Image (tube, rainbow, N blue to C red):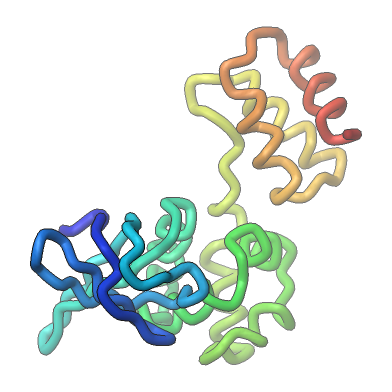
Length: 184
């Protein structure tokens, strides 16, 4: 499987990019034309989709976006093209927040997504998208859970947990630090 492609932008359109990697051109389904400039060197994270009649690459700007794409295509009835279109219209944080809060209206505004598909996305992915910290750190898991209980949204919790990764201290001390970060 091709995990990423690093090369020079040779050409692009609204839904694809041709990346020149040492004289070989990779056509990647890519829905962020605003990030592209001809002759610019860049790295695109890729998902290789293999079907009976086609092998294609889908590209992403970040590993976070790639991970969410993989989870989206695991939803029954949701293919890679619709999942890519969804990610082209919504940020990773906004989409995760919509799924976690059950915001069907937000999700149905995405291209190719009706109420039935939106409900299926929420049913399949709710609670599975929020990382509550490093598995090695029970304290960070406690912090994330405490913030969730206090009513903070996943999009507020994730950056705080990232900042606290590597910090030493008890759960109570880390919760105080997390709350201080949230108050800034």
